[in-house]
Amino acid sequence: MIRFTIVAVGRLKEPYLVEAAEEYLRRLVPYARVQVHEVPEEPFPPRPSPAQSRAVREQEAARLARHIPGGGCLIALAPRGRIPSSEELAALVEERALAGQGHLIFLVGGPLGLAPALLERAAMVLSFSRLTFPHQLFRVILLEQLYRVCKIVRHEPYHW
Image 1 (spheres, rainbow, N blue to C red):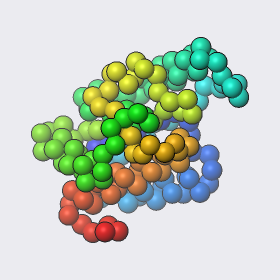
Image 2 (spheres, helix red, strand yellow):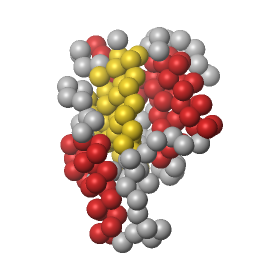
Image 3 (cartoon, rainbow, N blue to C red):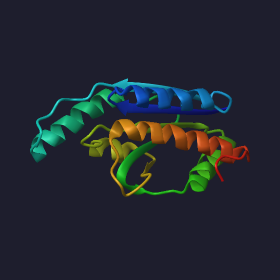
Image 4 (tube, rainbow, N blue to C red):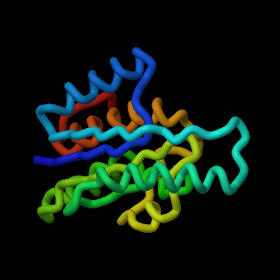
């Protein structure tokens, strides 16, 4: 069975986002094992300096790193990553699963993004759009895409 681990900065706070995430987690149960690890956001001022931004990303990176399991394919999600289609992401998941590497670990940064060290550590860096999304909303988008990927891999219909 496919395994997805999401390691993310911040917890979902808005009830509608929590409800949406729970719905996609429920839908994923027949297709994949999914674990979500949340780490606290590092506080920062309204207009952080480059040094403050770097320090925040490094603090959050240290927290994220403690929750990254070994043995999986680490995928960082960042605005400057490669943008796959849903079908391309499904092909990647299927290829990994067939090769016995069906554990994909997704890193989701906080409002200031991921530290360079985590981006370098990742096997790949992906983006879902050139648009910027709030990191909490992005978690729901990621879960929806993982559900869509599972449906594509199983050749099951889903909003075609």
